[in-house]
Amino acid sequence: MVNRVILIVLDGVGVGAQPDANAYGDEGAHTLAHVAEAVGGLRVPNLEALGLGHLGPLAGVRRTAQPDGCFGRMAELSKGKDSTTGHWEMTGVVLEKPFPTFPNGFPPEIIESFQQAIGRKTLGNYAASGTAIIQEMGIQHLQTGSPIIYTSADSAFQIAAHEQVIPAEELYGMCRTARKLLSPPHQVARVIARPFTGEPGAFVRTDGRRDFSVEPTAPTLLDSLKAEGYPVIGIGKIDDLFKGRGLTRAVPTKSDTATVEETLRALKSVPRGLIFSNLIEFDMLYGHRNDAAGFARAVQAFDARLPDIIGGMQQDDLLCITADHGNDPTRSGTDHTREYVPLLVYGARAARGVNLGTRKSFADLGQTIAESLAIKRLARGESFLHVVMQG
Image 1 (cartoon, rainbow, N blue to C red):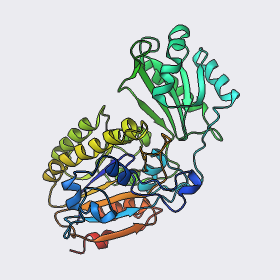
Image 2: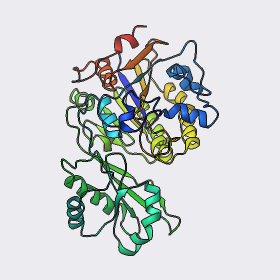
Image 3: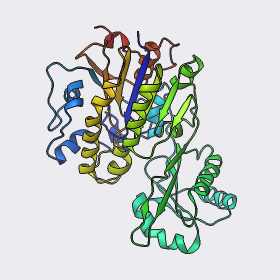
Image 4: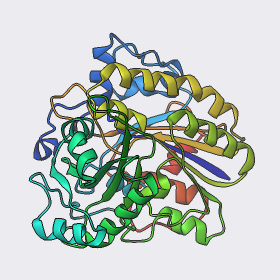
């Protein structure tokens, strides 16, 4: 029925606060609607054609009478709102307990153990914007050689260092050390390397970011597909989010443009299985920096490449476009927001214009992909394949 699935995650592109958003301080969040409003309307004719306008009022986006795709939205069932949690859930792993956060910094025993392990003192250890903290502490870092430790409202232990003081490979080694030290109850979702360059007053982060996630706590869709002999290609930060597990090939990228290009290459070279791509710039470059205009440009840039992706599809392919959480850049904070995520599904042999409704879990998508590729059921999620393929 389906021979290949292309799963594209638009990182941070939420479509409205979930009912429990107030528990996260995110009531009223709506990433896509607020971005569209902030720029006087989005111009996304290709997403519009798939049915994006049916997800609710979005300035500039028409509610197409006869969409080419199926459309809906998904709620996150897991506790939390980080990338790791979102990606795991869409592959069948639902977390009953959120990853820990450290709004007041990490406890002394963690910092002391880390310092002893790397042979250096550290700076920072508080919640901060990554771009701000390197300006605040960059000179002291240059003078002392001490890496800068910080966190956010997300479950993350971030390490920033100037590449001339601590080269990127050494910084990655420090991240691996931290990953081993951060065991329960301090097991954060991700340890993140944040290399930067430049001079005092003009420090800039490089594209050398790397995420070191915990290993999934249960078998995922990726594990099942790989076990059944399917190619599973992870493009962008997919490898980092799953700690490499379940992939037959990982393709790291340094930009969303590169991620789209690698996705197009995979469409030409990988005739079956799963092509799983994450576009990170919505979240990393614009959501976390309260840049609604930049966010809008990124959405429109992806829309402009969508015809290339669809043009590279085979008759028995299924394209799924979604997100892992929200990151509303119009809010006062700079962290992720607890939101529904979009669900757009397209295929030459799939139904047109079907409303998939509000799915109870991201895991419904993973279960649908599992059924479409005829592998065993995942532990969580309800498939909607029968609706998508009714035509």
